Length: 345
Image 1: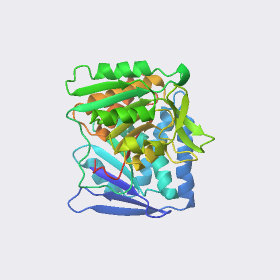
Image 2: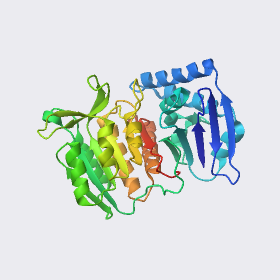
Image 3: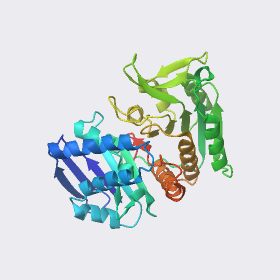
Image 4: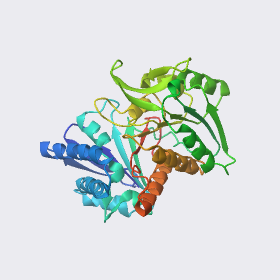
């Protein structure tokens, strides 16, 4: 069942269960104290991401998020007690108001109740952030046969990325699949990638591995890709408009690519260009965690899972491994943004 969170103005949080025969909707009025507390959760989360032994902090943040929603226990109870996976959608305007921006920034992936993270439950917990209202006439993307292009950017061969391990892990996870057409774009250049996809006639998904960060010259977040001479080239979200018309999903394996700081999340800006599903990272993720997460995502997609389902399955797998061994501390950093053209989950 899907729980949708909206903020029609800067002080109203709306909770809605839209999958019921008779949809249910409730509202919370948030005062300045509530808003400061929520902002503090965002700050605490960013501080905790790379701290060792941060499980208790993350659980505390997740439980406070649950308690916020559970001020309407009738809605939350129905959401959690229906058969099927838990689905949470944060839905905002194309230009989010301050409360919508805060909702996008909150780490709903670590939400917790009943002494565990929802992501650890045997029932999958999907979280998506959508810019604009859903087009219910459009089917969610799932793949019986998938054409995937992988591109890594290593300007001047000095990026330090372990993109070969990432590519190898994807191949390993999908080695038994007969429904995958995987090819590699060697240029590291967005224009070359777009041209190759255009000439191929069909491509479902692109995976780009690179660095990203705030560009002082451009005054925005930018990816560090390559120009036609393999030199560094800063690329903003607007440059993806051509690619957006040719793929259904972009997995952007770049640190901070879904982080909201002084500028909107890069992943959100990509969704606004028309890319139906965008996967990114809300912070600096370890190469090992990014690699395993990606492999799990593609394994699920090739079982005809939707993108939100595949990311939820990957997050669950990493969290369970983290709880057993301490590996994969960044199990919670993956984010999914949806464009308005995508149907419900």
